[in-house]
Length: 185
Image (tube, rainbow, N blue to C red; front, side, top):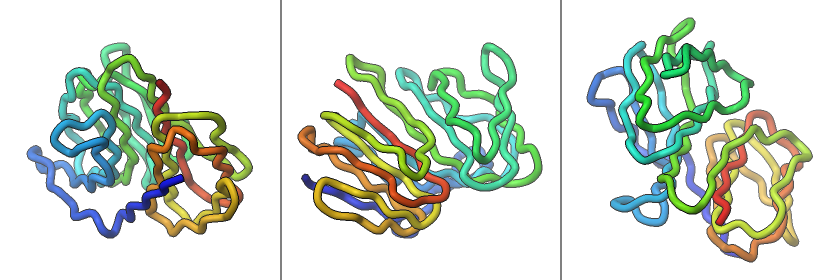
């Protein structure tokens, strides 16, 4: 199994055009110019609109801070630290209101196709099983993950991922804040 790691500290921040924050792109897979999946961490510094991403599904989770209120077509949704990731259409480009100051957020985008992507909270003891064309684990705190035949320590701010379909199970042994990201055929 081929494992790849990307550390948040190694990704330069890119300022948003609207001046509301900065994004660190961890991964645009399979290629940056023509990605199917995109994983990033954003620091939202001011309330304002999200950018539209037509043709995508988006997942959003608060890593740090008090959270946000997002004005989506079906109503306003509050998302805070520890909440399950919110899924919404990339076309929505919701207005975002910070609840009590800046936040740091995990974003996972997937271009709509015949595959299905998902993002979920990863608790200690949880696992990913079976053949998946792409899988990842993002940890906001130091963690340990059991792989086929060994244990991998992960530093806070690490994205561990693989596009090896034959990967066996991944089990999160110990972690604080963490999220599973997957793509199913």
